[in-house]
Each structure stands twice: as structure tokens, then as C-alpha cells.
Image (cartoon, rainbow, N blue to C red; front, top):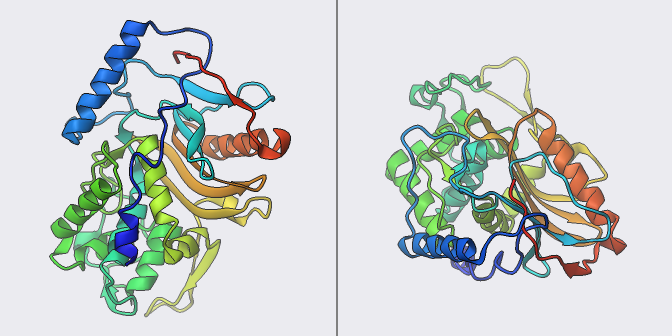
Length: 334
């Protein structure tokens, strides 16, 4: 029943089309028409083309930002692609380069979690870290040694909360049909959610070929927030794990420091980082009594995504209790 309800999240239900770009330079009608034509063509095919050597360069020839006039001046964010989405109205409050296709790093693990949970695999089943789960692509570190055995539920918690790559890999490997079947299920799930510009090639996000757009990630966060387990695991501040063979429990912390901040009401959280993707952050939050989704992609500095999230929070709080007055239709080439 849960899997069926997830399919109800469609592209049409989450509309970005009614918010246009922000003021300064107006694009010509011809350029706008051509741009829309390209988007429709891509949407029909529902195919994501990924270059052999993904980079952080956007595919859009014109990058833009759009926001609502909330009476506090423009919202200036450092992340390269952004969506601030109002769940009550199903419309964006702020958009920046939201259709740019790019690597998403460990944001991938939200889809990994949904596929595991949709399969209804036993969460108490013990699975082990295998040598094949070791990251040989980027040589990233892990606190889970080869041979570590934990329940599937614990592996899922560590993959979501602490972004453990070996845990994410073990979840895919122990899926019926192993990793290839798991990745295929990830891509089917993306299609069912209307994520037309998203593609997955692994369960951890270590591969730069895991790509999406900020718009598509709003759909993924919306879907993920419907799973109680994902809500719980992604917002757990810290968790002690009893690793067999260890003299003491290992403490794992959430990769998003904001979950430990009492000023934030976070319902779902996931961070990500590889060099091609920059630093990324997605959250479902409530600000000024407004449930919303924040997507921040390709933040360059270590703390930029946190700074941008804080700026968004203040921006919403400082606008008539978070109520939006009117939409400004404009365009601004970045």
C-alpha cells in the first residue's frame, strides 16, 4: 500500500512552471519559446544523457534565479542550484538553476532507502560488509571494516544518518538479484515519481553519473518524507553501534549539523559531497509554521550550504510570519 501511495507523487503535482525568473535582464520571447521547446522534447523522451566525464558545469545555456517578493529584499544564496518549495501551496518560493542536471553525491542514499523499504526486506536480518563494498573509486574512508556484521536496519540507519558508503553498498548487494537489480529498481522508482532528469548507477552516490536536478530532488524528498523510517534515521543526531569484535560501541553522528540545532524543525535531512557535485543538502523543514523542502546543490565552501539554509530560514521568518504576498515575474541571467 505504501509503495502504491508513493506513485501518486507526480510531476504535475509539484509545479515549478508558474514561477518565472528574477528581475534584471529579460530574455527575448524567441529565446524563451526555444527553451520551453527543448524542455518539452526532453520530457517526452524521459531519458537522461550523461557525459562520460561528468563535471560541475551545468547543461543549461542560461542559468537563472526566481523568487517571490516577500518584502525583505532579494535572497542571495551561494549554492549553484536551489529550490525552496512550499508544500502547502505546492509551489516554489525560490528557484535558482533548478533544471540543471548535475551529480548529486550521497543525496542518492534517499532513493537507496526507499528501494530497500519498498522491498520489505527483513530489517533484523544480519548482513555483512564485503570486500566488494570497499570504495576503490575514490578511496573514501569508512568505520565499517570488511567483515562487520550488522542488521539491515542498522546498515540503513548508518547509510542515511552518517552517509556510510559501505553500508549503502551492502544494502544493494544483499538485495534480491544483487546490485544490478537494486540499481534498476532505483531508476524505476525515479520514473514512478516523475523524476524525468534523474539517473542512478550506484547506491552510495560515489559515482558522478548519479545525476538529477533540484526540481527532481523536491519530488524525491517529498516521497522520502512519507516513510517513517527515513524521517527517523535522517534526523537522528547521533547513534551508538555495537560492532561485534569492538571493545566499545562506535558513535556515528549525523552529517548535517543542523539536526542538532534546536532552532530547526527538520523532518528529513540528507547531505552529499563528491568533487563533481560540490556540497549538497536537502531537507524537509517547517519554518514559520510553513512545511517546506529545501534543496541546495553544488555549494563550494564547506559551510556554504549551512549558511544558505540559515539565510533561507531568516528570509521566510522575516516575511509577515512566513506568508507570501505576491509573485514577481522576472529574469536574471547568472
